[in-house]
Image (cartoon, rainbow, N blue to C red):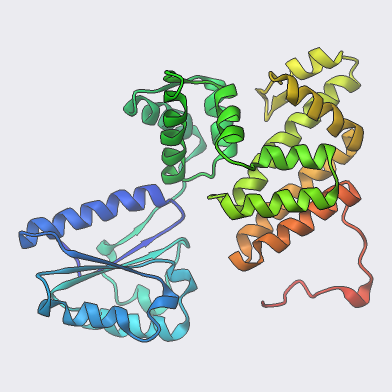
Length: 349
């Protein structure tokens, strides 16, 4: 890094590479000033009274340099954006402000006051790069991983290198208890099922074998401990229902249960049932959900994946509860809503 800018804008959904670039900024400030900067992180709701700007403008009274990070810029109200714009016009020489947004674009007002060389967009990793990245990350942690496990991990974990790396590290710690360093597909399923009191796998088991009310209770417990939130839950349910659909298709073509389970696939990749308990759960699931209904459920899950991403975090559990009711009570087919009860699709919440 040739120079340190007074204001940076790091945009886009890829948080792993953002974190790496933040380390570069911090190292450059340390090199330039001879000491590490004071680090301060804010979110839009924490700085409505100007606390962030007090640190930016008065930092010289307390230390050589301040590194101030404002995360979730996409949620900042217009008043805060205006204040940031005014600061960017005359930034402090003893502070560095880093603006972070998961969106690709900045507000137009900000685009014009931040140096173009201080703006970086961090895109999601291309699909073709993901398997190699996973293998390389595993190798750096003295782990190895087979192709099926790599495919499953990428299916279940959100496309972000920071989240992927965290999950690989936790997988390694889980395997270390039994002295293993190689990650298999079965290891990933075992890890998810044994390291949490509830998981998307136990939620599926409830959806397959228990009542709607029990499934809601499982979801509530899962939401309380699930680090990835609704998106992670839906991703795993999508993978499970795709495997269930594959088994149902194999059965429809005349395969025995053992062969249908053994040759199950997800997105063209092998996903056989290996645990005795899973065989019973999937048998029960196919008694409750027919093949056409499984296909409807997959379409519904994909739709709710988009809804959860587009709506505020506060609505996440409500959306997932609606999703469960449609799957369990209506087998994936959205019930018709009387016209007088419909909510306009362009409503702003």
